[in-house]
Structures are given as structure tokens and as C-alpha cells.
Image (cartoon, rainbow, N blue to C red; front, side, top):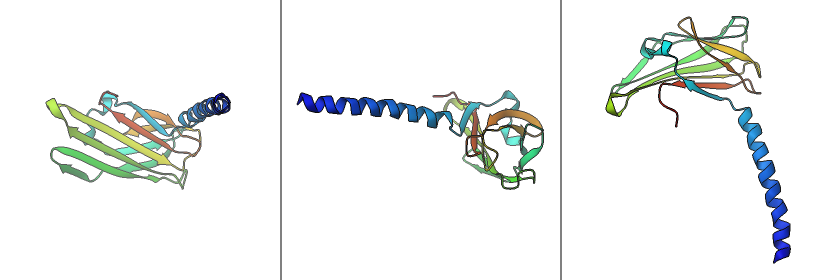
Length: 153
């Protein structure tokens, strides 16, 4: 019996060591970025224009919120982000969700997902002409930015 334990123990240690290392590698190149909603975006229902700009200030992706879906006091808006020609294959989508929770709390969330941008590159998110956030793409040129006024759990 002690022979089996001696054989299994190094395998378990090796698995745990490499398992955590692999997890750290995947986590460090994650495409999801969460941060608080800036106070400048307090009135999300009024947002119309979403732009993604590169370091040189050129608009890479752009979209407009035009259709609002309302149900049970909640608002949901979605806008495809179209390439402007600077990076023709770039794609993205922006989404706004506003919902009334218990105790008269209004939860607001802005999500922006981009893909097929340059890998490991910094970009800026502009909302109605004002810079709202900066983010960096992962090794596949993807990023998912989530900004909310809800406390993180």
C-alpha cells in the first residue's frame, strides 16, 4: 500500500503544480474586463453613440443605439459595432441593461464585446464623444468590457 501512495503522490503534486500554472496563464490572458460604471454614464438610457478608438485616436468600430426594448420597467438596448475601414474585419457589439431591483435600486450595466482587433493592443471606449474606459485585447484580439454600478460579488 505504501508503494502506491509513493507513486500517486508525485503525480498529484505535479498535476496541482502544472494545473495552477496553466490556470494562471489562461487567467492572465482573459478577455473579460470588469470595472465600475463611471459617474459620467449615470444616464445610460440616453446613450446613443459608441466608438472604439485606437491609440492614434482613429475610430475602429462605431455603433448607435436606436432600438430600446422595455419590459416590466427594464430597458435593454443593443447595438452592433461596425468596422470603419481602419481595421475592416473588426467586429463588436454594445449592450445596455437598466433594471429596477428590490429596495428601489436601479442596476445599470454597459457591456462592450470586440473581436478581430489587433492582439495585445490598447483601445479606448468613447460614449457620446466622451472617453469612458480603456482596455487591452487578448492574444486573439478580443476583449469584453463590463461596467456596472452594482457592487461586485
